[in-house]
Amino acid sequence: MFIGLASGLLDVIMNARVSMLESQTGKTVMNANHAMFSVGYASATMIVAATREAGVPPGPVFAGFAMFCWLLVPFVWMPVTDFVPDEDAASARYPF
Image (cartoon, rainbow, N blue to C red; front, side, top):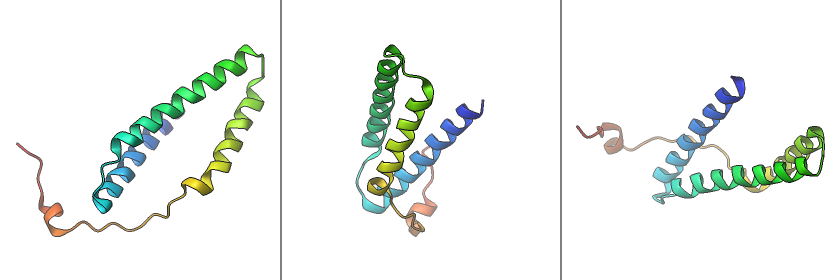
């Protein structure tokens, strides 16, 4: 239950962050975000399948993924900025 909750919360936070970046830059990157999310899941699945087939215990596999993520952080880190929408965006409504 907690893993599902964490995964869902992470998905919502990532989508909100990408939406904010889209509105700040004017570029559409949500499709690329979802594509890379899928590539990450597919890659992890293939790596785990290969390590299970090779008989590697789960501990070293988790440690390897943790190390990879830790090494990746400096390349993907973005400081969070305060976002203040303009007046027109704040008064916009959903279509009927």
